[in-house]
Image (cartoon, rainbow, N blue to C red; front, side):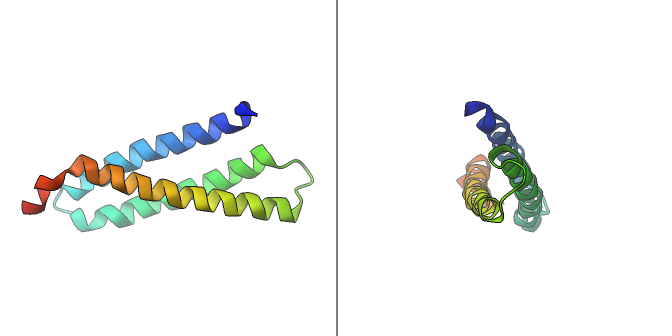
Length: 101
């Protein structure tokens, strides 16, 4: 069972690290208003890959529509939580003292 989760966990941790760093870097630059749209764009790509890998990991051929729908729903909820965590970590990287910039 853990072999099913390993690629999904690696993908998720990679997204969190990269997107949080990108969010923090863009947030402190002169283009700070672009930080959120850039992270949401990265998240959209992450969501598509997560859903594809999730269906491949947790469903067998032929893919039953009900099972695929449940996997897509679970991956979508997990991805929303990961997006919130990523933005929170990015804000922690930025720190409270950058509001005066």
